[in-house]
Length: 551
Image 1 (tube, one colour):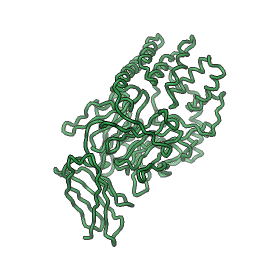
Image 2 (cartoon, rainbow, N blue to C red):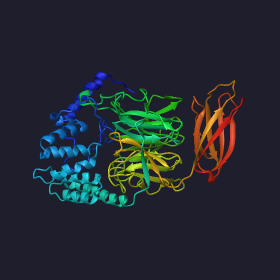
Image 3 (cartoon, rainbow, N blue to C red):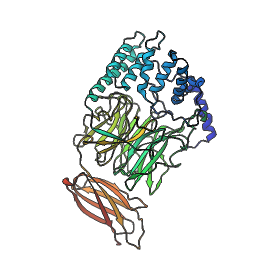
Image 4 (cartoon, rainbow, N blue to C red):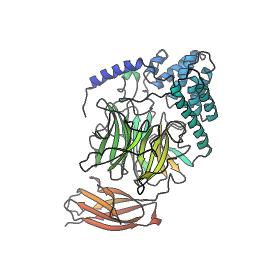
């Protein structure tokens, strides 16, 4: 990647900030601002530093510069001075809508604003959104209809208001039939008072990757000039030791820089990672990194077939790392961001992407795909179908015989809410999911939660995950290079594995059936084994030791 001096970056940011200051951030129509290359991947609350002093006289400047946390604090001061000021009430409501500090708290401010003669044209639109976040869907629908009937509303925006009404109707239905789940905050070992999001768990729940905007990040305070007090996004990870999650760690400067880096996908074993980069030479692009032992490789762009002039924002890999499903708003899609599939070619490049089609892609945005360990159950986020507001999480199953996807199923309330719900990942036991959410027991902004399902999450697909350890002769290389290939009864490759270089361990995830394992190792005798996983043993955990010998 091209590297630019910190001085040059700072000059650019100051220029960028001046441009932002002349632009109205919040649209006066029902239309959301389209994300352009170089902006953040999604709607994230910028985390204001603890030593940042808010001045109420600068409320407008904070708002224009998208520091909505600081703006909220400043407008609260102005509200105390004059609670009947329409502009202050309106901006307070907008700040709540644009942060993760309680969007439903915007309701009383917009209720006041709509009653005033000098109310902004979009006041009823914003009131409808606030009601939706408060799960007051009937009131939201009434507010949306009032806004829709406004003579000043341009015809091209009526469709978007109609969609907001549809989502409110969906919300009424989903809340009436909630799913049985429990939310467990991952605690202060994982979460911070900043935004913690994009959680991705590996198959056996021993490693968690996520993105955080917190104090101490490599680019902390430099994404926008430091006097604004905003942190950049870095990639973090946490590990389990003796059943207890250890304190999360920054993944380090090989991946994290002064800019925004987000983890958006991994393979099931968690040793291959897809990253979203937002830099001068990589605006809204996907990168790839792999782990060798405890070290991650320098991220490399996923190539011109994947990255375009548009925005590529989320991705997921199959067990063997040879199938990529990702989100892109490239030309030729069905609307907004769509999901595409690409195969890894023998030379390491990625094939020309193919759309997953209208069963998965709606006229609205799709993002954050997560391919389950059976290689056919896909979890993803969508603003279409029967979403109850913004992105909802859905699942669909691929049928290899017909080359089709099943109709997407909404994961249900309260996993899905009226806010954006993205980046759901599911452990191999199918009982524990991981998601970012803003809840009352949080530490601030979004937190990472483990979601415990009382029933099965999605379709009932059985599996077993097998922890394998390689044993080598005492007088041979302790950590030789090995390659493992597993085939089924039809001699079809089910998975290929590369044991970790510093532990001689690897993880297999298999369904019921008969299998053949073939292992080749530098300097040692090839190892083969036929084994069977009975149906009754699933879901289950197994351990296997593979004893290698000399030729």
